[in-house]
Image (cartoon, rainbow over all chains, first blue to last red):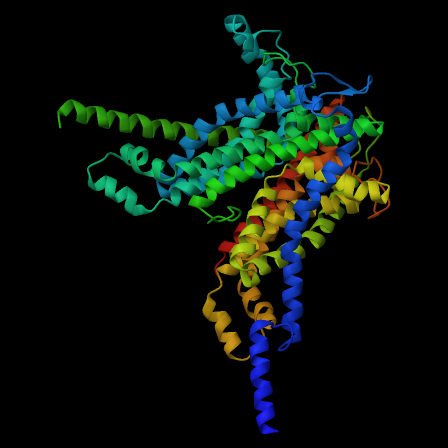
Length: 328
Length: 280
């Protein structure tokens, strides 16, 4: 009996090591299953997201095929849908945003991580993060009533009268249009790129800077020779994450871009992005194919942002792994 | 090294550092300008009717957005009830249970999901919930915002749980306390503030979202208290509607409603930070 119980206890221990849910504590087994279920819900959600969008856009995918991406006609009345103007608008407005925001963001990040005295650092970081928290629709409201009139009068009028030989600045000053959308996007991208690049720079070990300083380098030489090369991939990641944000940004852009469906070089013309088209036309979509085409636009948007985010995350992860949700 | 090289290096240094400072002040200046304007216009348009009255027919003066505020509270409440427990649970799994490879896959997926545009989430929930239920609802909107919150909460909770020293877990386990009890009674309470902060930041982020609501809540000019019954209004939706409408009375209300929304988001974000930094 004694022998038996000892043997069975050993067996139990061995079993518990291999399969803890078979013996030991029932509560532990249940807790593990629940936690695993909640953890895996993240993966399930990602899978379901992709499946559902493909499923709901299938009608449009089969109807238009690859032509959906290349066709420039977006005509709900004729039941013809081509995404080229929306994709073009998405790329150009994001490009404008990056061109305007990236130098300012990197400069600000360098200032915050390397140059600023500590009493200035925290309030500045705080303000930049507050700008990131500003709801998009509020920025859109500001865009409609403050930015757009300003873009129309001094900006587009003067650009148009002096530089209209460049196709970018040709055309009547509308205010609402690609330029206004790019400016609003620049404001939205700025805090994200700034915050991530600052985190990436702060993750550079102090010894790297000290080694450079010990060689007699100036502060800028430390930054350009040690800090920036060390975290280059992280900075590229930060810029790409900014691009991801710009591509998917909806409300503020919808409110200032003016709904145009032509591909023109002029930045003054009303245009549309994939996101703005979906947001502004959804309530008017009266038949299934129309809705399906809008969902396919959302699917394209998802594909672009997934690609952008995967690349960016891989780059940022190599430098700093924290989610960047909570700071200080 | 010659004196001219030295001078050139010093000049480059001053120029580039100065440029960085100019950029930083430019960025903060733009921000202060926008925030200041929104707050100033908002305060001057604010009145008590905004909170207590219902919308009036378009173009008529007066009225408020009481229905939108109630709707926003219902939607954010639903989103929190759904999103926070799942998110914190996923965070617990990541920090306490997940193996290396699975953990990294989930972490990476969560980070990528954080970057999915909210409008795509809106369309997703439209297909998943609205079409299946047959109508727009507060529940659908709550689910959409919960999906936006989930990856944020999961990652921040994980980070906070990881900060709890291993010795605390070991001490509890050495006392013969089961693992789930250890997590629930030792690890989670130790990380409590961090969890609250992460949750509040996610609520602030979701609370300002507009795009997903277009496809799930739709908007409603009347008061709706029903969770599943039909379209419901929300503060960001009424701002969007009024801002793009033609009437100046509505523009005034859009500014005032924006002030309320911005204040809500900022107060939640600030509370989140204070919870984390408060010494106690």
